[in-house]
Length: 153
Image 1 (cartoon, rainbow, N blue to C red):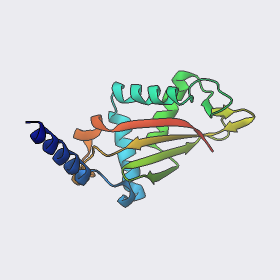
Image 2 (tube, one colour; image 1 turned 90 degrees about the vertical axis):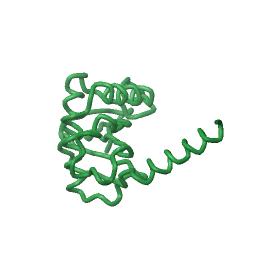
Image 3 (tube, helix red, strand yellow; image 1 turned 120 degrees about the vertical axis):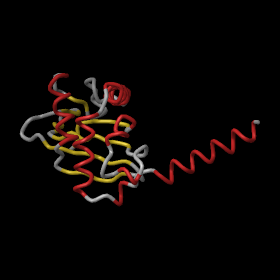
Image 4 (tube, rainbow, N blue to C red; image 1 turned 120 degrees about the horizontal axis):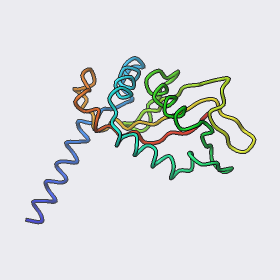
């Protein structure tokens, strides 16, 4: 019974990796389209996990050691949705992740010591989106991980 469970787990992990969306093969237009759709369909738990991870990393409280947001919470929420739905730049990261960046210059969105930041970077993990669903991702969008956000250059 134990061996059967181990074999099942290994099979499932291999199958999930085989289906995972490789962000390095996506065009910039596909990255933009996926971000727009995720901004529209991401659920409260996805945003909550993003807040939790970003808070743990120190980006939501004033901290001289790491970049932190200086925006009021309602303004930050709107800015994050805009970063995901209308980024200035997207960039694949690792195998299944992508970074979405939007510059709000001249507005300052964050600080670190004497440095002011005008851009927001938001990392998304697309690993639970099967490769065949890239053009019709809606059923899988609730499983996508909003990993982390922080002010950036």
